[in-house]
Image (cartoon, rainbow, N blue to C red):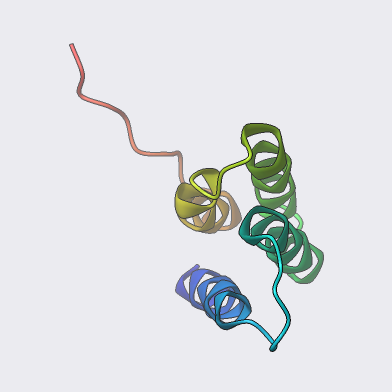
Length: 86
């Protein structure tokens, strides 16, 4: 789980540095999530793909923040943390 999250985070971090060309951060984040999904465990791939869709739909990189943890949890077979909101 940590390996997947670290690898995906590293991919996203490197993508954020750019390759010399100016790219839309939202589209870049979505593409990196899709790339991570292609290389990930079958249980984690749909989580990352859904996050990429949400990034595009919301035109925000915010959904990517929790996606890596959620993908790691899916791969490990652990349920997502429960909210204590009342």
